[in-house]
Amino acid sequence: MPPKSQICPIRWQDHALFLLDQRRLPAAETWLRLDSAPEVAEAIRDMVVRGAPAIGFAAAFGVVLSVRQHGAEAGWRKRVDSDIKLLAAARPTAVNLTWSLGRMAKLLETESDDLAASLLNEAQDQMATDREQNLQLGTAGAALIEKGSKVMTHCNAGALATAGYGTALAVVRVGHWQNKIEQVFVGETRPWFQGSRLTAWELAKDGIPVTLLADSAAAQAMRQAGINWLIVGADRIAANGDVANKIGTYGLAVAARYHGAKVMVVAPHATVDMTVSDGSGIPLEQRSANEILDAAGIENCLPEITVANPAFDITPAGLIDFIVTEKGVFQAPFDEAFKCLKTGKTA
View 1 (tube, rainbow, N blue to C red):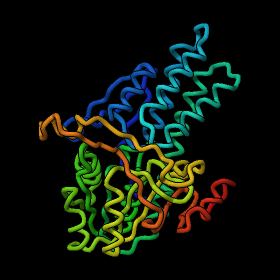
View 2 (cartoon, helix red, strand yellow):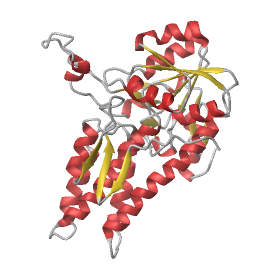
View 3 (cartoon, helix red, strand yellow):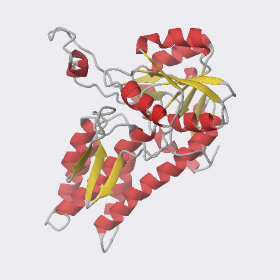
């Protein structure tokens, strides 16, 4: 079994949720203590924690905090439901958030001698399951990679975005352990620099060869370096295989197709939203203009300039070669391939 990264951005301790503040990496490893659901929602919205699976787990613990706070009060259920809505609205694109909260809401309907304890067990089980699934994702994805491959990834789909190991970076970790991956290329991922601050940091800590690029240098690197694979995560996958992921993924997939690199999307099967027929039905989060105007604390544009700051884009299914889940490896046409997910079967 390949060595697992020891990084995990979420922990429950002393009846509180602790989140590794990813806004401060790599300069400082700071943990924030959160004691209420509104604090968790704010942390999700403000990017203290990010990555679709990790957002879902944080929100699940937010429900635990809400029940611990309001469970003994008259009318407690309305207050908890209000907190769940607040958590769900924190970041709308990642389907893992609503999936995780749905699991917690279902538990609220059951009779339990200690509801808070039952909810805590569910949140912790979600994380434990994620770690197991990530290893499955890594093994399945790495099986597709040829020895001596050069890989590009985008944003951060690693241990910091999950309960450990990662999705896209699980494939990279297993592929490196199997001596299949020669080099990993990582773009900055502006305006939050998740690629440079988080992904490059993770890979360097694990001793995996990594080259950091300006985002605008990616296509040139594909041509000059001979990139074999673009491997990314996903925040939501539509029933036809269209993928919502960090802004910039679409352009990279177009460049990969032109330069002959294959595209692999790696995500737990819960990321596939069969209620959305195609990418046009996925809500794409629009974030504050200040993230562009004051990137890294530097005023780089006149404040009166109109700013568009989408956090995600849609990569059409036709640009994707493989979608890897713990339920199997899927190839186009994805709408036919995904039918097994409805029945719980593996591919």
